Length: 574
Image 1 (cartoon, helix red, strand yellow):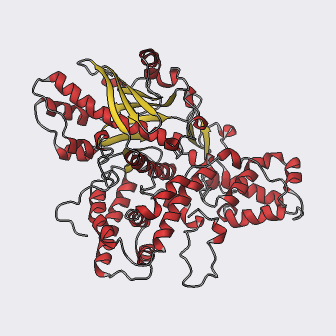
Image 2 (cartoon, rainbow, N blue to C red):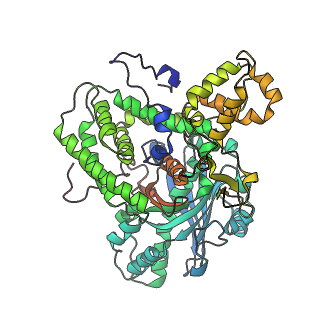
Image 3 (cartoon, one colour):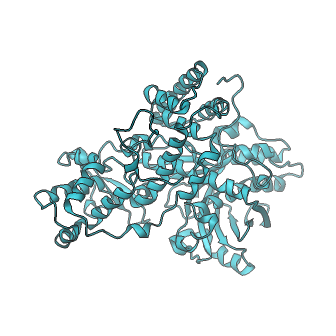
């Protein structure tokens, strides 16, 4: 089954028994809903682990050269059917006063490079001189990913001290934080001299989005466990290793800020593929007749409630949303207990009930839960989430202005409905910082630099294009219009991309005073497979990756995809 153009799907004249359509972009692509997304079985971390298990990859640690302070190098190797990749991990003794999640940091507890193949001693020596410096160093095209991480100091030290004393750390302390180290950057796709995406996207294991980066993070997780074991042994002869069950309960943390936010705007065709795959999966499930997987779904409910019960944040906005989600899950559990699934589209009936009775967080978590038991039905969609973005660059100059105007009216109603003469509608501007070349968000009325505004002004630009088309002949060719108005080339390209890729655009004004950048971060991180979103402001967030996931030694030993929802809390009910 392939992803069909949405024009074939959204037909209000369809008969009542016609196929349930995919949700329209005007519903899905609003910031408030994107900022309520949860991981699904199509998220990139889970796609990676299924492939590793299916293809029986082997993962080991051929090199471990650390001293009693934990300073040195380790190498983790992932060997697949055709290729081998190696994570070269450098562990450092970082003074506490230098430990920060901010992008301006220059030293970290650990730094990493994912290498194409197996590094030679000369490679490791070269990397030792460069990887700890991160973007200030030099890497080669044989390196695929560059990353760095800091310890979660209180938990990291607690685990080391407990193991050194011959006992396992307190599981409640582990659950409260969820990781021993958190990455502050994971770079790939040609940045800082790394291998270009084009050089590896033809490899099956890396054809999907961000698979090299996800592999690096999975191996970084193994490194964190080995590091606490090493330090415990160095501290005491009676040390014990961290229990495998506790290892599985921990992930890798991550601190992410505005640097990630523009991605959803700068890659419209790719984002369409991500969202379209997710929405196609939901539509497939909603169209099922009969409730073959109902018992599996019901069994997931208490586990989802356990996941939410462990989701603790300080942010007042997100705390309220989690409280509402908790109540919504109570409502959902009560509803499911009271109904008998019908033979005609029971999943669609359940989704429609949720739309009428649950908030956005609850609706989107239900989307994940509806998709979860139906791997055989939806997992093939993971193969459709990549996109040749270069093929989308060409502008069709033969299009008439009438056709262009129609596309604007049908795809960009949100932009045409915005009054950009209002101060609040243009309260913000996006720019790139001179110091770190990272995206930032400025307040137009309070800060200088608006003249350097980045082209993330889609709604405003489309509205301006619509005004420029007024009074022009509908039969006029677009090529002639752009010859006289070349400044509109970028926005015209976006409109034409949106015609072919309906989920390409965030359907909100990204300059608005009320816009929350964290919604953009949440959407992308959910596509990665992140959990435990912990906002530290509306501009940066901490999350957890691979929490509950199998260990490297588990790959190839059976099911590796039933880990995202933890065991139910004692006494909880579906």
